[in-house]
Length: 409
Image (tube, rainbow, N blue to C red; front, side, top):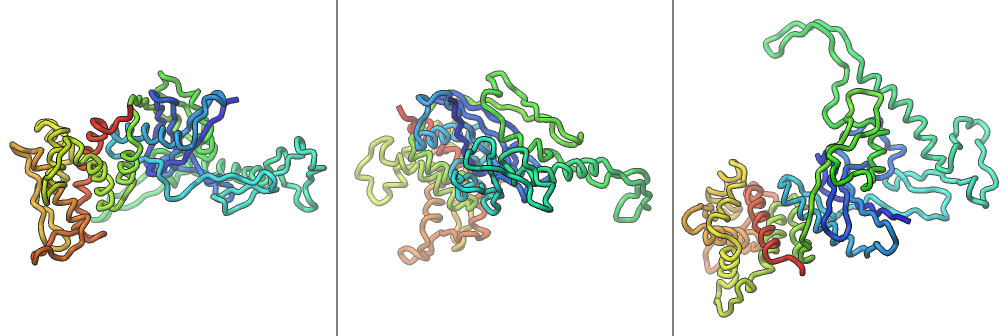
């Protein structure tokens, strides 16, 4: 009997498509979904941009199943490849809060609404211990059509609301508005509600959970959504295909995703820098480098990974705004500037110098060293916010290091 494992992912807002991953031991599907089992908190309409993301892995036979640790490792490898394709995405399986849970099979209730509400479940047809289930006096509207009594009753109420609100989306008024110096005038009809892109009604949103990896074949480019009562909702989701051929060192994946999921740019920088630090002293092997051993080793690593042309091409992927910021001196919170990044004749050495100077200012908080003020960043300051322009560059360099040296046999 086939089994599907579903995992909640973080960082998936504004993700309006399905991704099918192939190439490793098991295929994986990634798509938006409504989590938390909403009942009292269910909405008539949802926007895709606000939904959570889930990953699905299907095991056709019991012999295909892998351990929880191997599942996590598989997901990390696939999401690493996705992060290289989409710089704007920060999707990862490292969670601060969990959206799934297990219910007690011996309880009369299941948890819904992210475990804030309990919904009655009694299976009179299949549970020999349940002699009968009848509506109590005065409660004739209780839906007893199936075992999921609490959710069925709530759904009946919500379906009427969905239809009513869908009709309201079509409503218009007629008006005449005189122009003023501050706005244009208008004569005609206006909709009372204007929905944005990515709208789904309740039934469409709930059906996302049922998307099966078997329904998304190798040639699938679009997956239709179920019909809606209004023309203003989405009709389908596009499908992207991502193939992975490498498995990466799990320690490096952990460091990489610790950087990817961080909002704080100081912590994000450290996560990606730790990927580089992992290789210091290994490529090439060096000894007796004296006081500045890490600085020299970082320079050796960068020159090992990149040609002058390659490192410049990578840095020039940055936005024009980010390039403008990183090319100027970075003012630290202590008032000591870090010399800007200059692309010249020895860019590898310049990049390693720049990264090392930033690393020291991020890691150390000493006010002075040998009687001189030192560069340091204060968390959540205007100075540390400038590191937002640095993080993409160290992220790309970390990814290149992983692809070159962090592939598992």
